[in-house]
Length: 159
Image (cartoon, rainbow, N blue to C red; front, side, top):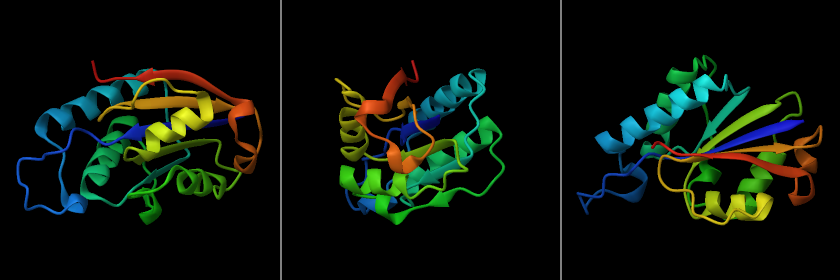
């Protein structure tokens, strides 16, 4: 069994139009939302074997909060592909994960994360900022994940 957590970054600060998209930070409300979601995940005893995030500022901030709240003490892997990725690029990145990793968490962006949920489990709603999904796959290799063995466990929201 493989377990994938898909987390979208916290609410982004769009107050300064001169900031490059890559450098946009999470708002104070967004930081609190990510903290709340992380605490809910902690109550579920979530601790990923690997945490991968887009290297954009807002996803780094989000991943760091998640890591702190969950007690994830390994290095966060930053994958440039996750910034402005097409859904097939996200899926390809997942399938490159070593099979000794059973629980993978990805922190990224829309539209690719929502598209991933649509492709894997027929998700019917957008993944909003600060939200996430838990998907389980009935397989033993990340190269085998697809809609036929995927099951949506829950869609987690800040409140």
